[in-house]
Length: 304
Image 1 (cartoon, rainbow, N blue to C red):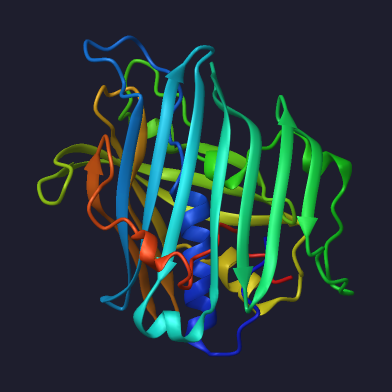
Image 2: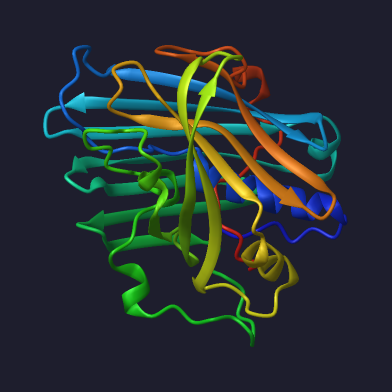
């Protein structure tokens, strides 16, 4: 998936940061841990609001299904821009990922995106086997550019998709700060990048739909291939040292999902906050009537 090629000043960076935040954060964020007294839910939905410089500009809904035979999981993400940002950014889409939970976390088997941007359809259909891409449909293909870093066969191996990017094994202490010390190889069908987590810290959440212990991590986006090396938005996001994600356990305690995501930009902070935290449809999910409205695409910033 490509970053929006907008020329609306801060709106371009906002769309880019929102795409990065969703790709980096709205994902399965834990692997199977030790047994808990309460079993993990079969279906869990978290709803989120998106704010820019304190103003509400969008919302999203992430549904996790897991616990089927073989430790399989499924993720379904929808998100919509609204208000001022929806006026500048025109698009719509959905993203899904599925696979199984291994000892080291999620092992994705498929990743699909169906979306429209600026009136044009965008499609990704990726099938994986043990971390390697076996088949890929990408429409449209990235536009050839002299400064585009070419993808090599190694860039399609040992990777996870954006929705499964934060599949962290939790072990005996799921909220240990050391869980943030890791580098996650991500491939979205067009670009290969690393999400580098670090500087873990424990926090206690006392307000909002979830209340209890949480884990804070810094996030860095490191482009590897498929991106434009001279792209200004790529450089800004690669140099951004002010992105953080807060993870909280779902009922049962064996899995973590993002509770909040913060991405600093030159015009202010893009912030995603959980507005619903439950096993079924959560408050704030995009209603069916908004299916045709502008949607945040699940993508990494590649400036195609």
